[in-house]
View 1: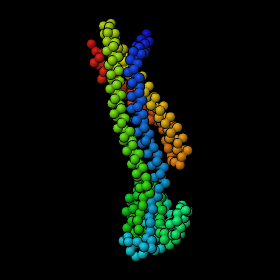
View 2: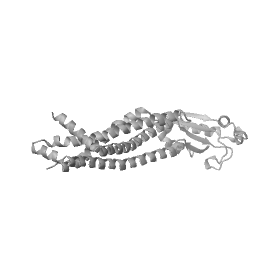
View 3: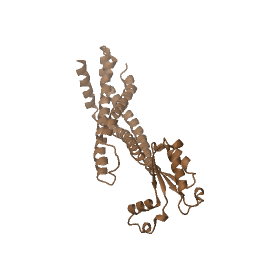
View 4: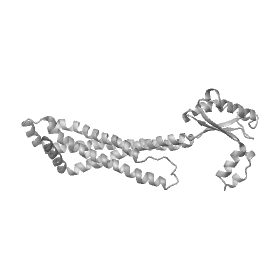
Length: 305
């Protein structure tokens, strides 16, 4: 009997405040879409770092024929200097950090350059003697670049050391700032959603104040009186959350995956529908939290004696 009464009251309240309820759904949808976008952006950043950082190497470029670097003052790198650099990389403090060391000679560097830029006129004018040898170092943990750099950059025969992660630093900075922007907008929209849910519950409570007064007079519990109003806010907020999850799923499915697969970026490990489902429970919990906060703030005042 009480359950049927509560359900009846809930739908009666939603029907009476249809416009406000739809507003709650829309604002919750938009705000949680920003929250979900921020979460998915961070997931994408994590995927890119895991994928690309695992591939990048530390490049140790050795002294060419002409260089004004102090470590190259004796001229081009010698065989003895190369052996010393290789020994530093494969023994001592760096032994446990280095996974693989690959040596690229001048001839190999020239052939690789010709292969990668076959139509470049300036490249065609170069010879193997114009190139410089290098070591390509694959680290077990790419974050340990500084240790390798400090140990090798001042060795005789080393011109400079390059961490390929720097190539991606700008991209990751843009993605992280986009995440912060989405999160900032989400906070503003969440505040608007709380205020709107609060207003909806307050209007519903005021419009039925006579009914709640009668219920208190006949001995109805506080929970029984307040529960219909709480459920109205919860239903509207959760509906908005479900629509936001659907919107994120459609965006990832048809904009991210389909677009990337049909473009030159199909080698990128992008987010997928599974990632949307992983953030979906958090969005539902946030929706429940929003409606819960609004209910606590509002009902104590507008359904009390």
